Amino acid sequence: MTEEAGRSEGLLDSLRNLARTFIAIVQTRIEIFASEIDEERARLARIAVLAAVAALCIALAVVLLVFFLVVLFWDTNRLLAIGVLAGIFAVGGIAACLGLRAAISQRPRFLSATLAELRKDRTRLEG
Image (cartoon, rainbow, N blue to C red; front, side, top):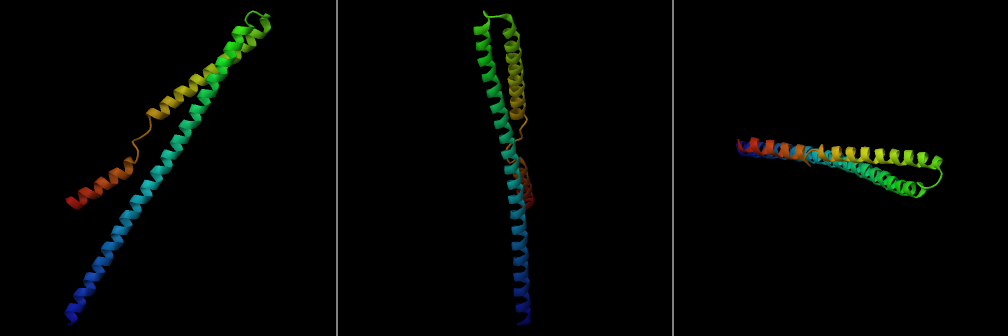
């Protein structure tokens, strides 16, 4: 009877240890998943801000360019100021567009670290 009790306690301890290990593995994977979601959210926020700045600068450049063309036939002092402002906004819009393109092209694959860890787990369990 003591042998059977020892076996059942050993089996229960083994099952508890297995459950603890499984829960720890799942918790680690969820933490990795959550951190990747946070990183992706920050990346998307940066892309949205750059897109908004690019749109604003290009819109202002277009408005000022139109205003520049209207004033083109008026006195000469206003032309230089409007032309310089239009140029500044155009350069800002182009710089923001280039930054936006770089941010989009440099982003890593979504959830790549989580997927890599899950692949490692699967190969360890299979092998």
